[in-house]
Amino acid sequence: MNKKIAILPGDGVGPDVIEQAQKVLDAIAERFGHQFDYHHADIGATAINKSGDPLPEYTLETCLNADAVLLGAVGHPSFDNNPKAKMRPEQGLLRLRKELGIYANIRPVKTSPNLLHYSALKAENVKGVDFVIYRELTGGIYFGGSSRSEDGQTATDICRYSTAEVERIARKAFEHAAQRRGKLTLVDKANVLETSRLWREVIQDLAMEYSHVAVNMLYIDNAATRILLTPQQFDIILTPNLFGDVLSHVASLITGSIGMLPSASLGDKTPLFEPIHGSFPYATDRGIANPIAAVLSAALLLEHFKLRKEAKAIRTAVTGLLRQGIATIELDPQMICDTSQIGDILAAYIADEDYQLRQDVVRAGASTII
Ligand code: IPM
Ligand code: MN
Figure 1 (cartoon, helix red, strand yellow):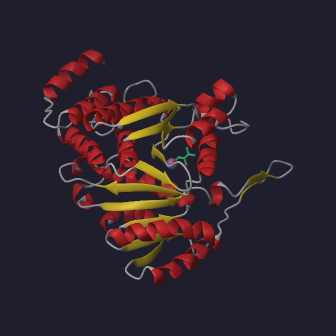
Figure 2 (cartoon, protein in one colour):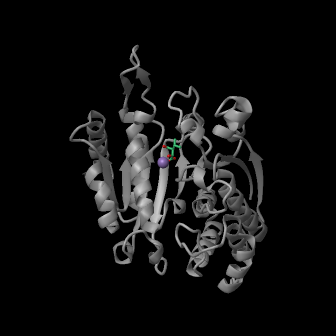
Figure 3 (cartoon, protein in one colour):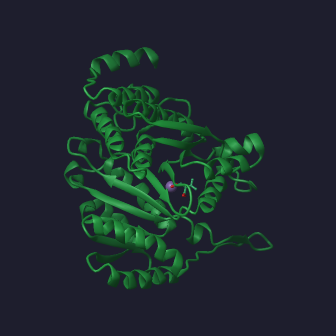
């Protein structure tokens, strides 16, 4: 298969983790006889610094002309610490999502036996977790418009949803639930918000069409604790933009850290794949960023093109790596394997399924690097 992939490394640890995802994709291309043509472009703070625009025209063009986009992260402290900044790196990503019409952001969370000790939670509480968050990505409070009063003392962000916007992502979520365990949980704040009551109406109507899917509804505050206490209860979670952002970050503690969860964003045009984490400024150029979320995002990309064996080869490599006790420092404080070495090991696993890594060799080798 021949695929054109737009690569947007972005800011902070973005370039570091994307480099590893590319190593993995190269290993897949080699082993399975595919050709991936990469087209690199800037986004976020990197793009602002080069061209004064967080989403330059050529970046958008590159994405629209590609079969898929693989993105690292956007965001930089120089903007975070300056609330008056006129332009922000995040605007590039938000505009790109809107332009690509990728309204469904899919964030799978699944634990593997033997890897439960990496969880930030108690191992017995995260056994057998397997759910998928469907986060609405191009509407709600992220896109309703913001304003300031004339005296600058009052700020407004508008949360708006139409039934059409809710229905299109809800259908995707229902269809996915029907292929899985047939359970869909809507997470909202319908006891307070009118938009949430609209979501409930749409979901209740659709529930009649998808009669094999059992629907329940939870308020976000309740869901935020249940996702940590009894995560096995969830199959498909459907939720508006902002709640989905927060809930998926919380959920990342189940598998270990924010560096573990990938995402796929699907909609009208080119699909986009990105780790759920941000640009993690502290870790930039320190070799401590976890590339697994980016690598697993590449697996979701391949799966989208029905390259299932290939996606599975990536996941097998990731579990193989972790099972051998190799992980980045936030999962294992004793670990001295850096981001790039992890990319190399994963690529080696993919090239040769029998590849066995002697941990003592890695530790000895790594210690000369750091
Ligand atoms: C995410 C990020 C983005 C979001 C930011 C960088 C705009 O946090 O993808 O989770 O809030 O959607
Ligand atoms: Mn986020």
